Length: 184
Length: 184
DNA sequence: CCGGACGTTGACTGACCGTTCAATCGCGCG
DNA sequence: CGCGCGATTGAACGGTCAGTCAACGTCCGG
Image (cartoon, rainbow over all chains, first blue to last red; front, side):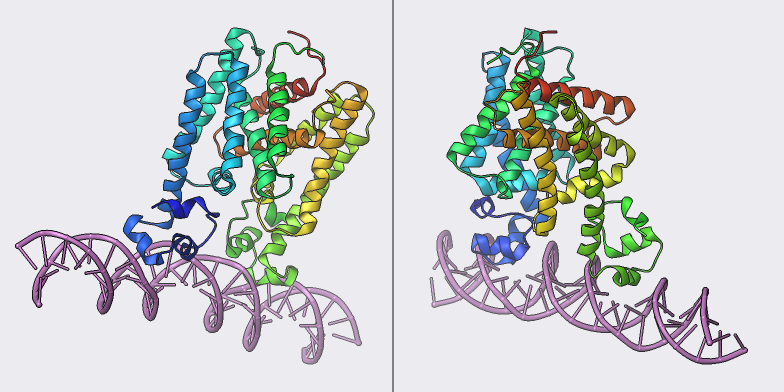
């Protein structure tokens, strides 16, 4: 019943959504009260999955930098699996006046990143003088921008590219947070 | 004549823009052929300024990490000076089907960052094994996300905050790119 | 075979908004 | 003073689109 959503951007009209789903647009209003609710549902459902995977990484044992790598992987792999979905999430999520619940959910994502960073600081792996909250935004921003680049077709796509991006982001971010980096 | 633009987001209606400018909405069409052209003009004009300042930094003498710090400063200071403008740039620039010229201009911005990074690699200040192009996206993404956080009111604003953000971003980014980071 | 409950449809509506344009203003020049 | 022309206005238009609703199909239980 939500199959229709995982394809396509949500800048589209109600008619498009319905067509994608193979039903008349009127039918949408039996399941959702408004177009916005469709988007919200899709977003929430998928973001929740992402949060679950984030939580799993956070709760796993291991050093903070490995966890951070795990978080990066999750986001990039999601892209590889379902570009259209990522398009929606990245483009619509950072958007304007959305419901408080969505903001909360997004905040939870940042919270995970922030806590991992703080853990790293406590362990002495990451520099303690950095503002963990800001750093989490930096990390997320880096990820989102690369995803956006793919979505917009302005960065080359492909499996190797995803792997390369994963390496680059992890290197920069972990290196930047790290208390010490060995010269190569 | 463009005073009207530096206030407010461009998700607004033509009427709003005109009202902001203190003229009747019909008058807009003596100066611009369409609403989109207004946006494009505002964007181009301001982005050009930003590019000029970027270029100045790039051409200045000095180590790459200092230049990078300079670029970060430019973007964050722009925010401090004119939040509304940044709102427009950040929110509308990453957007979908815009003119090729705009894409080119944006690309030029990334180009500057990329070249500074490459310079750093050539100088041995930055790790050479990183993909400079991807890294430039990472850097820009980090900046944009923090700006977005301010725009959305989800990160605390204020002069000290801007300064703190500048430090955090520079630390993470330069540290991450750096060949060696000294333990603190 | 009937009835009604539920799923489904798509023509229709009402509002919004970008764009047009005929009418008006006001300023400078002869 | 008055003519003319660019600047300016805002009512009207047309298209688009989210949301409504009355009608129709289908399926099942009695």
